[in-house]
Each structure stands twice: as C-alpha cells, then as structure tokens.
Length: 312
Image (tube, rainbow, N blue to C red; front, top):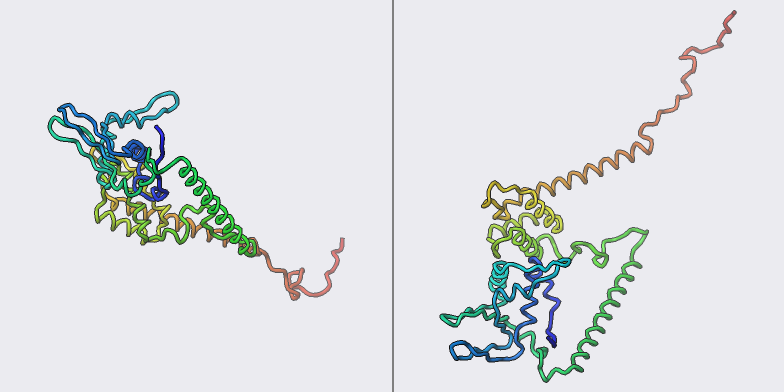
C-alpha cells in the first residue's frame, strides 16, 4: 500500500490516546484503510454499493486479523468481541459511524467522520499532490522541528542564566510530571485526565456520571496534585478485593476517601520528616552541651583556705 495520510499531533490530547493501546491501534488502522476516492463494488443481488472517500467496507473479524501483532515469535490476535467493543466506543465518541446494511445486504461499512475536512489534498493517488510536493511538505516540517528544538534549547539556556546562588528552580522543560501553570488542580484538563483514567481503570462503559465529575472536583479542590491523584486511583483499583464476579468499583466517589487519606498521610509524613530535621539540627548545634563552672565555684566544694597536708 502506497501513499500517506495526515496525522495531527493534537491526537495526543484526545480520549483515544488515553485508552488502552489497542483502541488507538484500531483507530490508526481504520485511518490507513479507508478509501481515498469513491469506488463501486458489485453486490450479490446484482446492485452496486458505493464506497465513498473516508469509508472502508470490512468485517469485525477482518479488523481483528489485521490489527494483530507478534509477541516474540507468537502471533497475537484480539478477540472479535473486543474489536466490536472498541468500534462501539469510537462510534460513541463521534469518531466513526457504522452502517451494517439491511436484509440480504448485510455488511460492515465504517465511515470516518469529518475525514474530508482534515485529509483533503493528502489522499492517496490524488493527482494534485505530487511526490515533489510531498517532499516539500516533509522538508518544511523538518525545518519547523529544527526551529522548535532551537527555541527549546534557547529557553533552557536562558533559564539557566537566571538561576542564582546555585539554587535549582522548577522548570517545565526539565521533565516535571505535571508542569506548573499547564494543568492546575481544578482546571478542566485535569478533571478530564482524572475522569478518563477512572473510565479506563473501570474497564466498562465509556461515560461518567455527574457524581463522578463532582468527585473529581472534590479530589482536586483538596489540593491533591494530579499526578498523585492518578497514582492513588490506580492503587485503589489494585487493592480492591471483589466479593463476587459482579462486585466492582462503579463510581469515582468510592475512591475519594482513599485518595484523600493517602494525600493526608503524605502530608503528615512530610511534616514529621521536617520536624525531625529541625530537632536534629538543634542537637547538632549545641543542644546537649554543659555549661562551664563560674569563677565563684571552688574545686574544694565551697571550702576556702589552705588545704592541710595529711600527716602520715
């Protein structure tokens, strides 16, 4: 298969990127497979079915086969039921639509919604897009990447010259898990990240309730850092012991108490460590030293005068 498609960096901020890897693998496969131009195929009843640009006529089993992978030397292939679940999720996210036909004309026709709006001028086989134009786009993108690298390097060097007294400062360019100023505790992005992670760990359904959203606000309004909240949330799921097959965590509200407890434990341990450091510092700087005797004190125990020699 030849040609190329546009792939946007903004996808890193999408919901499908937050889901298990198989979700994004399926989505990427569909983007590669859809038609780049309209095409007609004959049907068994003698009619023709038009497959438009941005559509792909396939089956669940065919998708499962084509998104498989090798794990060592063993071929791994997802269950068709798993693929159906992923397709339903993509459909609920308004990323695709599925037409299964009717009567004797049953099929699985998948349409990528808004395909033409962001794939125009980059479809496979488009006579208006030559190989030379493609290379121009690639070179232009490379120059942009080089420029971005230079801007990052300049920003890093400028930040280094601003440091004073050898005291390190927090810098988003140095790999902070959640850079200050990018995601605040109560920002919509932080709420979305927390809710998406909860849905992923819950492992069923694709929506959250208003109660889940309120629970997310409660956690972040308690000044729990988003990276800590995600860590404690996973710990809650990992340590949960279901009593039967239908016993599971259904609500984010169930996890709020656990997350706040873990956050308070962290604060208490930090305070204790700080107090111990202060006490150790006081002891090190003379806390246990003895005072020297004053001039009025006598080594004879208070008796003044000559000490007679004992006669032998």
